[in-house]
Length: 381
Ligand SMILES: NC(=O)c1ccc[n+]([C@@H]2O[C@H](COP(=O)([O-])OP(=O)(O)OC[C@H]3O[C@@H](n4cnc5c(N)ncnc54)[C@H](OP(=O)(O)O)[C@@H]3O)[C@@H](O)[C@H]2O)c1
Image (cartoon, rainbow, N blue to C red; front, side, top):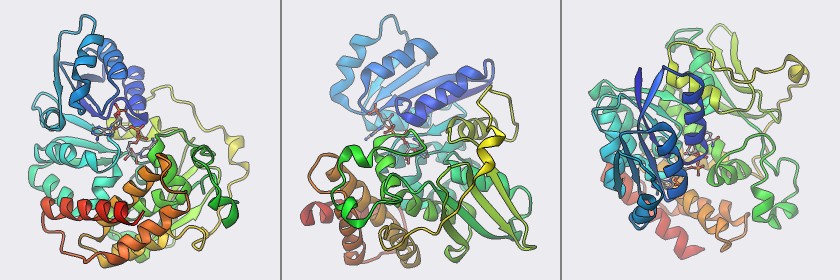
């Protein structure tokens, strides 16, 4: 039985992960859970899954968490260091990385350095410093398993050939709520408009990233680092049905794709049970849904995020970390009502252009670039 640590258990991916655990009794034991600030949800999860250890990152929430833990007998911790302590705890052998944003970097890295299997949904750290994470994993004998649906699809499809035989990767994007909107409509978009995702139900940050196509921009870099495919070999197509999650083209011209309903429990389950496939009773794609599968070129004028991604990728070094941090900060400002939706593009583009790229030598250099970009966005918002 695998002993799990779920980082970010109270979020959309965390909740889906625990549902997969529920659906496969006897396969997993939940050893530890972590939250950012949602004490109530963490307490409910602790009551159901009885982990040995739980941690909340916001120290101010510790007392609230304690007060909600009726009869829970495990250890209760608070603070960012506590998240790292749980991630590297020798008593768990599989860590699900499901914190949102750069905040997941240090705990995920801590797990990788301890030789664990790590299922990664938290794409931002991979964008910031994928090569450092992969090097840490290789050194410690860790395995990284992608949870992001597109990367899970690439991972699954790529198994149809050898690594050197992959010629091209196509990541699909739903197109988000503004796929057919004019620039004028996008300029007037409210928070509610931007949070209305057509096919997926997800946390707020990734939902806004889907509306700007920045999610796909981050995924291009994530795919480059995870699969070692050059940027020229990674394309994005808008596929409004969100059924085909990615396609892999091989050197002989064969194209292999992975299809499934837009339900994150499937890629989560695959990452958890890999290399096995088990029946967790998840809803299966009804064949009639495949009657219309459309693919369109993304509109790179209305959605410049994809160009930012290739630019950051080409520049290399600290540029992807700056792209990520500028976006996180711009999205935060949009969600708190400080800047309009359309300004996200402007803020990210300007920050990327203003950055003096440094080699991505170590984590402190990456975190310094992250701090610089957030500060630049705040000063220019
Ligand atoms: N949702 C999806 O379908 C999906 C699909 C593919 C990839 N992903 C990726 O998976 C990650 C999680 O996405 P999500 O949609 O699940 O996000 P979410 O619903 O916002 O959940 C985020 C989780 O991270 C925790 N958290 C937030 N800030 C934190 C901090 N500073 N320190 C520690 N923990 C913190 C939250 O805790 P509280 O709730 O307690 O504050 C929550 O448990 C993201 O990187 C996203 O891009 C998500």
